Length: 79
Image: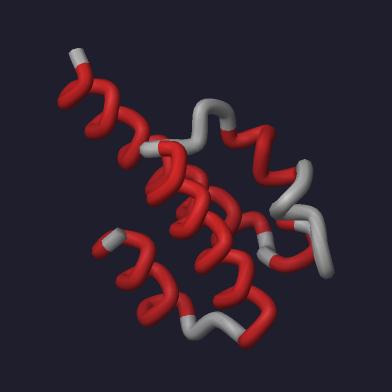
């Protein structure tokens, strides 16, 4: 969660983007990690705006990388 909080701070996100990242944080807290980043285009992440519309390509890539790192760390701990 520290990485996602840092992402919010460093990327100077707007309110809608912060809401989206907080949804990701809530999802990870409940499910340990995001299995596939394609989930970011489906509920609960698609409302009120989609991942694609909220973030430019650079921010999308950075967020996806953080989400994948969280998954890697989570699956290492589980294994």
